[in-house]
Length: 190
Image 1 (cartoon, rainbow, N blue to C red):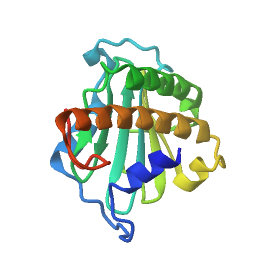
Image 2 (tube, rainbow, N blue to C red):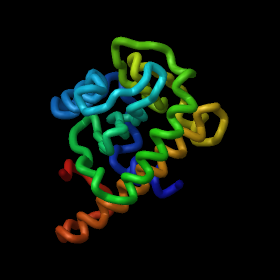
Image 3 (cartoon, rainbow, N blue to C red):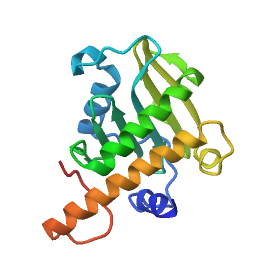
Image 4 (cartoon, rainbow, N blue to C red):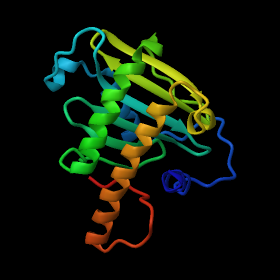
């Protein structure tokens, strides 16, 4: 788990304190598309309480990391200051971890509050969006509490980080195949 946190922390400089995040236009578009898509548009027909999508967003000093898993197999990670890793559904590791993350989300969706706007999390907080057949709900809490098992959503947070680990494996393999230097992704890779 420590390698996942260092992977994400390495994407952003540690000293800054965000008042407002820099939000790249492609990030805003992708995020809005996911949050406002009707399940029928992606071939899904969930019942009212069924979670068909989960977003886990964590605020860091310079940006927000948004992890997405949908019941149609979509698995992606976006960075609010630009970049991300998409097109992960065909890879067995992210596919399996995405399904497990989505499945576990079903147990926690009732903790969310119904919402029609979609704020980003505050720095050092994680916000979950549960996309259900009847709309979106959300919960936000301190990342540190989630990471140290001090919140009832901690198991979901850790399941999300298992998915991030699988994404990292795929990204590192892609980078090695492309001969890209460095240890952590800094830009989008389709």
